[in-house]
Image (cartoon, rainbow, N blue to C red; front, side, top):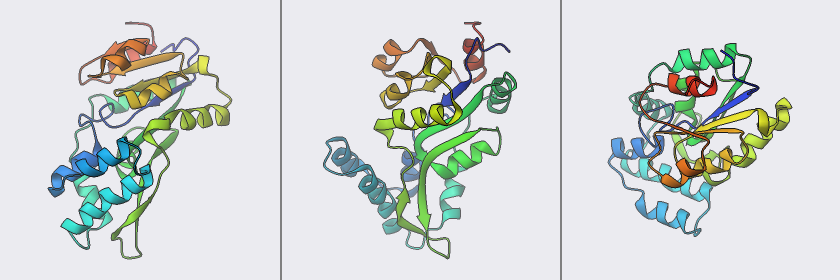
Length: 219
């Protein structure tokens, strides 16, 4: 497959590589908790993203004291992945391009996905645990959803790849920051017209091969 000079393809995770739009929300629903108030505070700038992450995890702990990493992973394992994930990523990598996940979602889900398809770089947000594997209200924020541009720029600098050699795939306006640093930008199953307007391409459906076809200039 000829990617026409693209040497890096960056994927959002939630809603792009998975069918569910948010790994955090998926766990909230499974746990029967509501984070709408902390989400409101984050969106209005009243709390930081780290405080937002801590409040989410505190909700899980309050509902299920002693909840472990394995408990959360079992929930995340139920999230359906898009069709032809492995084939799509293999085709991109076989073309000589590097692949990356840049997501505000949960790192454990990104690890599961990377167990099925090879990604050269994975950036997502980590929940910390104690020495017995129980989750604690703390984490490692690798991706602030509003500032994905800092991550994609760091990858480009590390690999010596320019914006003209970069493609990115996303589904929400939080991915707009990646699009601004990519020659090819693909809005995949996006319900936000603003993102589709700024993208160079749009695609929908459950098959990730659509992404490969666009990158190969077949769409």
